[in-house]
Image (cartoon, rainbow, N blue to C red; front, side, top):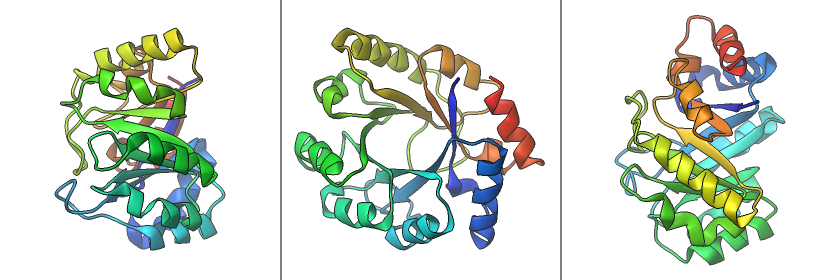
Length: 215
């Protein structure tokens, strides 16, 4: 069954613990935490203090997506704050291999992300060091964008390469995911669906989670 990771970027930050508890109780598998630095992407979102507060408020799996230019500077801090998975961009600065190894040394799951204009082959050399790869189906940095179908062949290419290398690496997709395109994404190889407004923007959040879990 495909997993669901609601993006807290679309939650009510004045009632974040309430919203997190609601989606987890409804059956969400992970919590997706978008960290933006205002440099790698245009917007600024949240940082270490929010992850630390979330860790105190929930035992849920924290999938922390670092949309930052120099992730190496912050890996230790986010791991200490309670991240379960640290996800860096292949387009970011730094030694990808060294950073992925360090993430695992910190006791976290390791992941790489590719933007819409990045070919899936960019992460092939690093797959043995990845517990997950995230394919962005929108340009990172803004919520509420329309899903890009060009992400689907990337998922298929990554799935084929993961199988070819005999690896245990999950695939995640993030960006414009809703109940209309989630099935397509899962069929293309996505193991984890990140959904923000389609969950937290729904009239009945719990019902939205249930609907995703039925796919």
